[in-house]
Image (cartoon, rainbow over all chains, first blue to last red; front, top):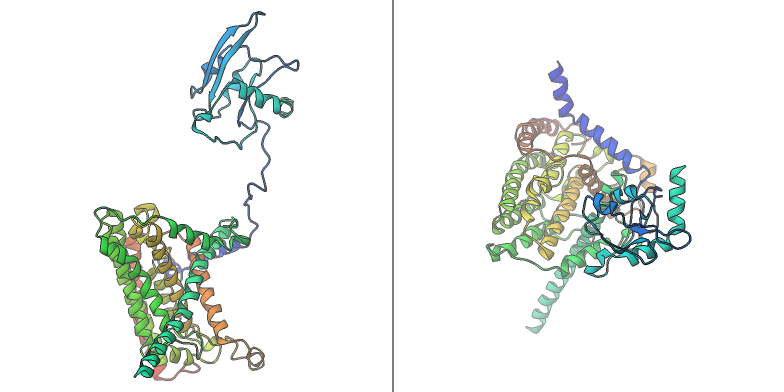
Length: 160
Length: 344
């Protein structure tokens, strides 16, 4: 009996029509597409995009060249060289991030004791030439300077 | 002498113009069917579908066509060059040629053949040669597998399809497509889909299989054999296969309309006052309306069903469709013999 009903069910395409009914309903449902350049979804405060190096409010670089980020980086994307400045601070002379190697895991910003290296919510960037994928200290500080308010705000919101 | 020559030239020019009158709208419709397909599948998947090129993506097919025209046509080194180039033409030409016998409305038909149905069947059967030759000439495993699958599938389903059309021919008593439509006169419930319902269902499903469309698209089988028979084609060759597939889809939709759904006849002929009210609507509208409805169903099927397994396709074709059509042909024979009203 079960076999017969199963046979009839498949012969009259019952389940296929159920499937058609379902997709037919979805045909008229509201679409979830977000038309990207015009519409954007909100980003998390913890969004991990392009890197930046921060400064203290008085303009001194936060980075103390402890090289923890270089050590923790799973993709070996960070290269740091350091030097002691005449006034007794240890500062970086080279701070390069290879954006092709970087996997945007965010371990560098987690490990940083002074919150110097951070990942900003910038996700729309590109390289015009092949060599642009390595960003140096100057560029990183520049990004940090221009997005400081946003970076500080994200961190304040996230901690409380 | 000169007069006679001029007359002949004029006749040829006139014929070419008539052909263009059918071929160009069909090519345009084919192009827009691709857009419709992407839109419908998008909607079913809760997406919006292409909407970047032009207003609501309406220029997308033109952009696609332009892209394919500009792309390089690559012939693989070990391919049979002649057959490789001929195959896409062989796939497209029959599906366009078949349209010449299709009556769009009572007086709008290029060639009102008395054996129109046979001609159309012959043309649609020829289409598979394009696929087989493409698969063979490519000299590629995947293309060859796709061609074999396509050949086996087309042959199996052609039988069921042929039998289901035998029922229509018996009911109408004619092979002329216009006569078949006129035999269904009398409104929605007089059309052949009702007395020949199993044949109609078998025809509709076989038509999907015949055009190598999802869920019977093992010939393409993106997930198993990459793109099947047209794996090696690029640029215009690929575009021609694409056009052929969609032209075939439109053709089987049109045939389904003619055979089972009363062609250009209005569905409201059985309601007297409504019929008078709707008399101003040309037959062409009803024909196109029905054809597009079937076309939409084809897209809907593609958006809904996963691909059949090869052995399931064969089982369905040989063990189910052929017996069903056989049985119903006998029923039709009785219906016709005893002139069961209102159909016969």
